[in-house]
Image (spheres, rainbow, N blue to C red):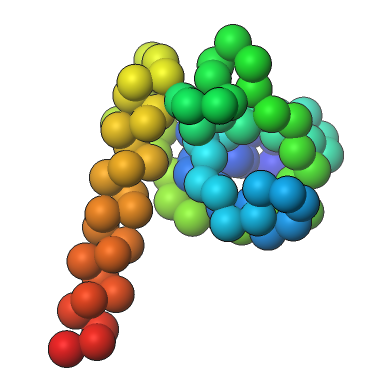
Length: 92
């Protein structure tokens, strides 16, 4: 994978005690990324996680150019709302 391929993207944890959590990737190196969700993992204390334990969801970087914890929480909340609406439409 290319360097900075994940930076600015929303990802979902596929392994570990945080399985199913959605994060914004704020930085990366070859094998790991830095994750923030604006709540328990803020920009000042990001979580480091192996890339192979993540599922790429969407690129949210355009909407969060200068992220802060409030913008990150809002971006994740909007993504979950859109996902829920999509699931409801599929069930109709």
